[in-house]
Image (cartoon, rainbow, N blue to C red):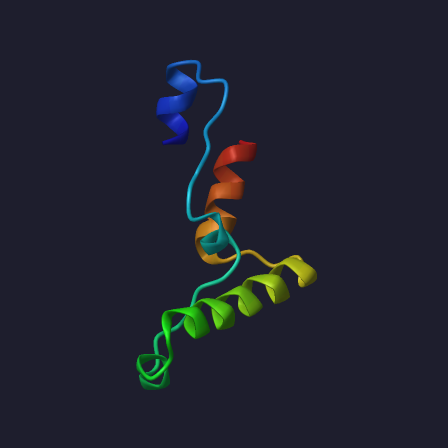
Length: 69
């Protein structure tokens, strides 16, 4: 994506599902018992903790490296 954008002079690349750049929700059997709202709230908490501590997920770190090179 980064190479394509650079080779075609894109001004902006706008990724989606950007919360995954900061955290992942690891599946566990307990998640099956949660509503979608509860599962999203627990994922949001993981993302907020990662943002507060300046952490990136592995995908976020790879994207950051590509975007800055």
